[in-house]
Image 1 (cartoon, helix red, strand yellow):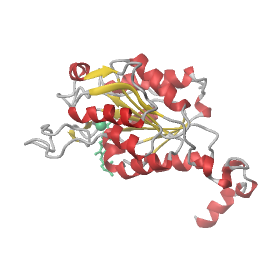
Image 2 (tube, helix red, strand yellow):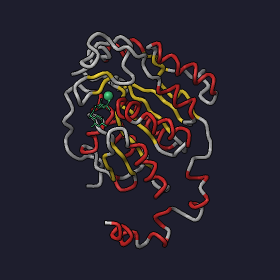
Image 3 (tube, protein in one colour):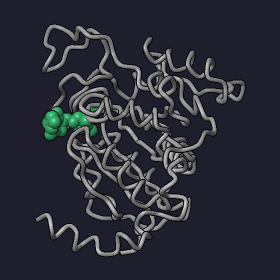
Image 4 (cartoon, helix red, strand yellow):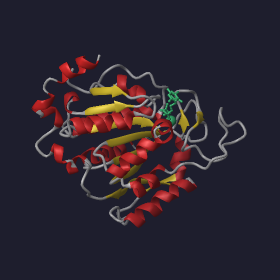
Length: 280
Ligand SMILES: Cc1ncc(C[n+]2csc(CCOP(=O)(O)OP(=O)(O)O)c2C)c(N)n1
Ligand SMILES: [Mg+2]
């Protein structure tokens, strides 16, 4: 198999995951990548189940732990692009700490988040991006906490590419993913994605009515302008497009150990299999 197609997805008909799966394959193909020229780490959830639906060098992380696995992959072979695919629960909840610290390091990975505003696979509990007051299985009288703003966190903590997009616009998602992969440094791509089975609040209609596209007047290189746009997400007005993009050295570029080449090319690690055997 030399294309990205693998097993047929088992997602619910109408789920936004389908659009993200198609868009990701189109973006990778459009950039000229093959399944053996890109590394991916999938989180746990309906989003993470994409692991089985895409043919690529891919592994499942534990729930919330896909970002540190991806950082390790990048440091082992910084010559290959590394992508993370996960849900709002895994990336912003269980993995929230990893998310923040990956931004700080400007690690050169692309994090694609299916933001359906619930824990989808476990049938609809409240997630970090769920709206305050939302009634779910885990919050029957309404969510007490206010929703987390991943765009503002990423911008303020050091991410250098921060975009928000929506599965109602597949072409837009393809373009944003292509740009995110091509960007050097930490890229967050938050994708608004209806969960038609377990989130009856954030529907296609809801996202259409509450989102708008950033126009060319938006200066994505300006930190303050980007942050003002990002904060709109906390008022349930979703700007779509690239909010922030700046060029800064990525983490791996500042490691003197990697100047001579990728770690996997280092002769010292040729007998890595033997080393592993010593410990097992
Ligand atoms: C540490 C940990 N906590 C909880 C779970 C149970 N669990 C598996 S999938 C899931 C929900 C995933 O939600 P999200 O990350 O938003 O992905 P989605 O299914 O919505 O795409 C949960 C809570 C787990 N596997 N591991
Ligand atoms: Mg989710």
